[in-house]
Length: 127
Image (cartoon, rainbow, N blue to C red; front, side):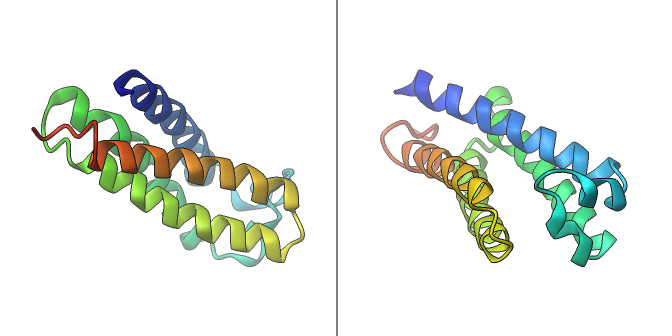
């Protein structure tokens, strides 16, 4: 179970890192033209960049606290926050009729919920 949680956190961290880098450093116009990035056309630059920074922090929060042993309780908190972020992403993509991205965000949500459940419960870092 511990290994599955680490693998899940690693996969989700890669997703968060990829999304965070693109939202933080790629110009909004280029994001809006990309497949699945249409939602950025109506969003402010600051909002998109803020989401990007939050995703970068999530990538760190899913791995780093447990890896260095400093505040490892942040791992399930980060995963729970990712669940909320994915709810927002699902609503946004759903409004745009992008069902493929709704399903993808649901997969990320389930993975984050698994990590939150596992790290809050049976495989908690705090013993």
